[in-house]
Image (cartoon, rainbow, N blue to C red; front, side, top):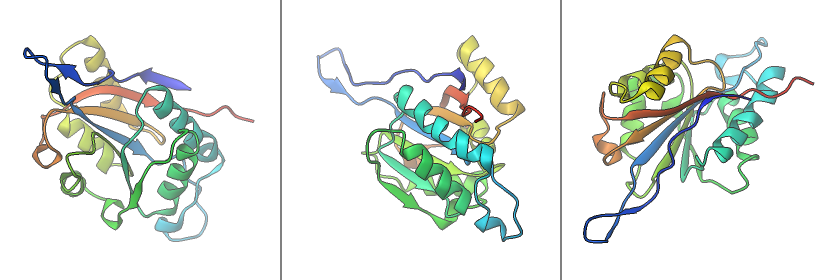
Length: 196
């Protein structure tokens, strides 16, 4: 597993009056694992051998990093559905998933519109999709790095968002208010499964 950095842990805290305050929401972006290129329509391309190894590794990374989603929004393509199925099997818990046609080959603005519809009760949202939309969304949402770790993660993410890559963004407000520069990139990893 090639974990680059793990996200900060977020939990409920107390304000000055001792009342519980809600933690920041997390948007987790997972690019589908490596696909094969058979003679089929793009939407029907399955995972290739490397993708079949890497997708479970992505699930283990999510589990180990404490990024268990409350909801998954997944593209309807075969490779994203297969990626999620293999990753989900490693989480140790059932997670609700919605397969959304709009996530397939979407531009960042389209992805943001889909995310804006998520109920505020969902504190960790996982979006399983495609590049370049996911990479552009992550780069666009992330504000200027607050420390060296964030800066290093942003540099790696901006250089390449390969298959099975995971970006974790901390979002301060409701999903409908998510806008460019409003989130922090708190984790970036490229999990890889061992070759057999």
